[in-house]
Image (tube, rainbow, N blue to C red; front, side, top):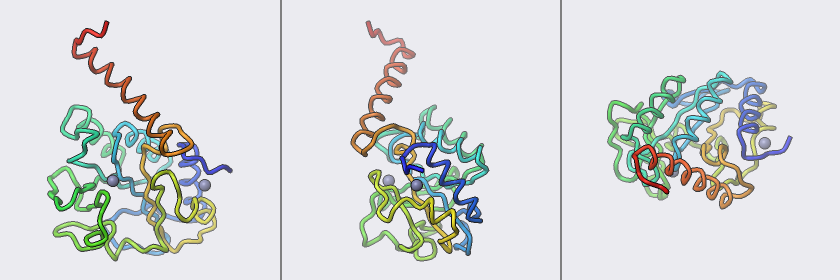
Length: 213
Ligand SMILES: [Zn+2]
Ligand SMILES: [Zn+2]
């Protein structure tokens, strides 16, 4: 098995968790033995989040998507944003706020769970009023955490450890863009994402009756 950052290997990770006897948990209760928290910080692309959400639903997995209200890359209030939100919810996933410090305003769309975007160490693990902090002491512990940040596993891809039940529990943070868009490095993947975004925006311009001739 090669540990590619693509949807086929993401599916392998879900299957490995299942084979290891894990259950897919959400952030409303502290971790118990056998819990895997599938966490997605959606920094750049809602379409990638929707594709990952569909894959998880087809695998019988429940995840928590952290969406931004202050992203410079997508607009949750647009028709596209509303549709993505409804689709992710409709597939049975949870939706928390991917918050930009210090704003943790949770409107009715969100479950009361927050994950900071690019946090500084001073507030990363601090309690958040009225919400669970995904990086708070209950849910975050370095030995029970893996992240695909910048398309690199700091402590290795966890598929093999999941399959043999090596973690007491695990918070697995993945960024959908990395798995949906092709590229052997983060730089290549980001360029794939931008190429797709350019095509998508050209189609939106045509829909808006902009003359592209
Ligand atoms: Zn792997
Ligand atoms: Zn982020």
